[in-house]
Image 1: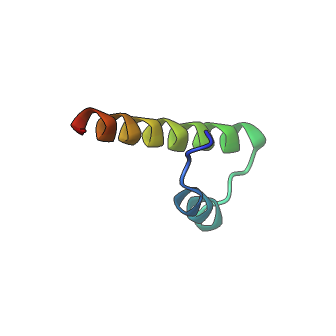
Image 2: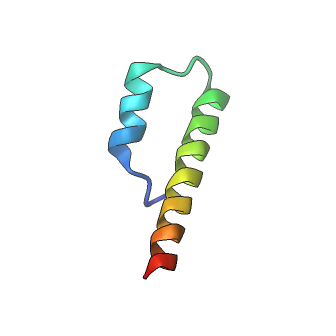
Image 3: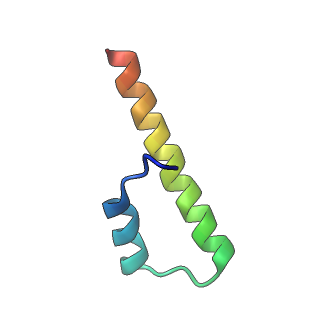
Amino acid sequence: MADLQPRRFHYSLAKNAPRTFPELLSRAQKYSNADELTNAKRGADS
């Protein structure tokens, strides 16, 4: 999760704050997965 783009994630949290900690973790995981997929695709294109 170190490569997670903080701007998009923080904007999402500010726009729609999670009500529970598990919801926060779930959203963080979704952003992390999307970021990893994007990075993998960029690496495959090289």
